[in-house]
Structure formats: C-alpha cells, structure tokens
Length: 234
Length: 234
DNA sequence: AAACGTTTCATACAATTGTTTTAATCGCTG
DNA sequence: CAGCGATTAAAACAATTGTATGAAACGTTT
Image 1: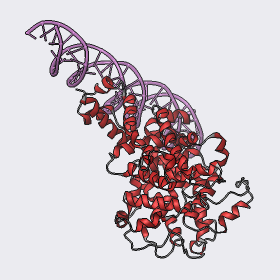
Image 2: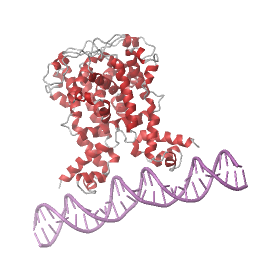
Image 3: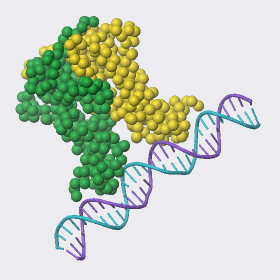
Image 4: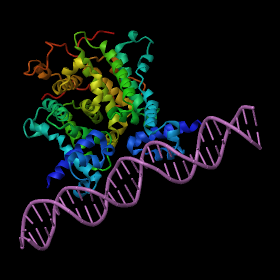
C-alpha cells in the first residue's frame, strides 16, 4: 500500500531528527516504520534520498508569507511594527509550538546548523526567502539614513534570538531552573523577544503596554518596571 | 614519541569539527595525523575517548573569568556596563577571532547544539558557568524590581545573538552579500550586538558614542542615525 | 481461475566501521 | 651487545553499514 511510503517518511523524519543522519540506521528506520529494509530503496532509491525527502517534508514550516496573511493580503499596506511582531511570533510559534511535531524543527535545525550537501541547494533558498522577508519588514521600520549592513545585523540579531531557544534544546532545560520554567512558555518568549527587539530599535509603542492588559495571564507580575529604565548607576 | 598523541589529538579535533563524530573515521584521523590506526586505542583506548579528549582540548576557549581580568581583579568592583560590554566582546572574539583555531569553536558548537552523551556532564558545567557569569553581570545592571526570569530571558537574548554568528556558519556566507562583507568583521559584530543590547536595556551611555570617535575604522559611516530614533511613523 | 504488475519479504552482498592481535622496531639501561 | 619496556606497524577481527537480489504475496484485471 501507499501507506508504507508515508510511514517510512514519518519514521525517517523522527529518527533523523533524533539521532542525525549517520546514527539513524536504515534498519532502525524500517523497524520503526514496520516495513522491510528494502522498502527504502524501493520507494526512495536510497537512504540519502529518503533524508532529502524527510527534510523537504519538514521544511514548509517556515513560511514567511504567513506573516502577511495575518493582516491584509498586500504586504505594503500592513503596519510594519505589527509585521515585525507577527514575524517574531509566527517564527517562534512554528518552531516551539506544540501543534508542530517536534521532529520537524529538530530536523530543520540540524540541517540549518550543519547543512547536508544533499539538501543544500533546496535549503539555501528557504533560509534566504525567510531572511529577506524579515529584511523587507525592517526596510520600512528603520530610519532612512541607516546603511544596508545595519539592517542585516539587526535582522541577524532577531533570528539569532529566535533560533536560540529551539537550537539550544536540552541545554536550556539545564540552564533554566525549574522554578522559572512556567515563565518560559512560547508566549512568554515571544513577548520577551518582541519587547527586547522593539526596545533596541526604540520602537516602544502601545505594543508592549497593550500586553499588560491583555487576555492571557502572561504578565503575571502586576507591573514590572521597564527593562533598564532606571538602572542603578555605576 | 609522545608527539604522536599530540598530533593525533590535533588531527582528531580538526576532523571531528569538520565532519562530526560519525563521518570522521578513525582511519582518516590517523591518516591526517600520520600515525597508525592502532594509535587511537593505544593512547586513548577508543574513538569515543579520543573525541572526549578533543572536546576538552577545545573547551577552555570559553573562560568567562577573562571578562573580569580586563578590569580589576575583584568582580564586585567593576563597572557592570563595562563588564557586559567586555563579556560580549570576549565571547565573540574567542569564537570568531582568527587567533583561535577554527576547529575548536566548530567542535564546541557541535557539542553545544547536539550534545554527545560522552561529553555531556563535562560540557554542562562549562555552559552553566558561562551563563551564570553573564547572569551575575546582569544582576547588577537591571533595576531592582525586575523578576528573576526576565534576567534569564535577557541573558538568553544576549548569548543567542552572540552564538548565532558562529553557529550559522556557512549559511551566513550565503545570506550576506559580498558587498556588505567588509562590514561584518568581528569588531563590527561586537559593536553591533553591544549597541543592540544596550539599547534594548536602555543603557545608552557614553559607550556607543565613544566608538564613533574611536581608534579603529569601524564607524566608517560619518555619523549614522541611532537605530530607531526617528522611524517612519506607521 | 489465470495472468498481470505492484509491493513485501528474507536473505545475501560488498564495503566500511572500530577494535584487537601479533610481530617488528625503537631507545635505553645494565 | 644483550635485554627490556615502550612504541609503532601490518594485518585480521567481528560487527554494522547501505544496498541489491530474487522469490513470495498481494490485489486487480482479463
């Protein structure tokens, strides 16, 4: 049945994400899928081709277009600040949200941090698309005189923060003490990063304030002081 | 001679960093080192033990104590702002500076992003030390009322930005157009991230301004506008 | 029911893996 | 030089890898 191909692809995605390409043996994959060893070559032609297919199956996670879908269809008519906030939110929710199977982001992370020659060309485009979407948003957010390379640096600072949480993976669980764990929901992280970035860009609008009166229980402290507003002098 | 052990360790570090644990075969390592295959087991007892040793040899890169060495010996007497700036600088310079052999950070990055059971315990401590050093600095930088979890989030935002550059590796070379390449020296990145973080924390002091009149040619634009100072209104 | 293409299975294959073994070589002390 | 421990070398080890083979089983059509 055609189902075997699907089961094989799923099992491959999970095991590749969990162990990486080399440590995930063809036999283990087939065992998990409940199919014969020969199925890999029958349906995909080889282990490497299966890996590429698994990555491709996991990649559609990152659709920067989803950012624009949140508002009007036409990107040029959206509020750039809202766009940036949405970009951060969607990126993080896609990566850390529990609606997305965890193996997908793990696999993508692996490919991002240690690109496989096989998926290289395919993956390059994906990342570039994503990054340029962010650049496009920043383009309209940052004052006129700011040179191009600074927009790139800002964009990298943003994706750096966003990708660190899923990338750090197990390390995070060691770093963050259990008592603070409830403060590290996806929602909390989204808000922190957005606030951090907005503050860095001096874009403090009604945005961050609106959160304090928001529906969710995210702002559990009654009213925290702004980040560095009145830091102790040295 | 005892030299074989050293050559073996070096070759192992380079190959492990380049290809990862599995793709770096014991024979390839020995070939590069110019020693016999049996040398691995003779000197280290196995491939895995050799890997652990290679990681340990690369790990001393991250010495957060170096931050305090820059100023007075006593951490409590240093200017916290300067400490934070130094922390960012030292971390990035250690990771991206050309004085450090590139295989070391590559290897550490691999271990950080995909921890090997073998080095796990050893590595955990290293990361924790580093992170808590940063937390200690933030402790004295951030206003009193700020709850603990926000300091953690801020710290993660900082290390997220710093680690992204070396972690992204090859991808960065695809993302950044050649024309902008000269603006992405270690020094440029150090300054950007410091400025970005300081701005986010509303710590804009004489710090970032002093750079503009600094010795280096980093601020090549005559006077760029501050990041988001007068962004276009929506 | 017969014949067909498709899919599944058990098995075998060659290649590579990390590791062991055994002998040869070196450097030194007696 | 003889003798000895430390080191190196070549070859062989068993185990695992990805893949290929050919026959059995399946469902569908004739």
